[in-house]
Image (cartoon, rainbow, N blue to C red; front, side, top):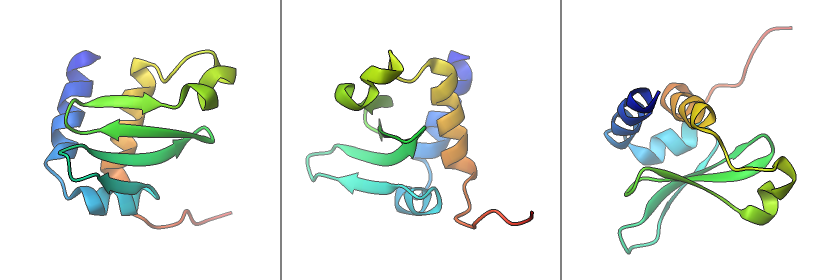
Length: 93
């Protein structure tokens, strides 16, 4: 699973991060110190993916009721969501 995560990270970083954030309903943040991140909501909680070190950051206060931060499987799921999101709303019944 670590290889899948690494490949997804590399693919994501090669994309236009502003568009990735917009398409996923997230926010692209560049604090002008070299730290770029994409912030999204996952399970109703804020999660940031920091591009420079390919890590996920979760606010401990927000996540304490969950008992733990996101797992490796959830990281892969989030990365693939970011890669596949098109910005269109779901349709159908």
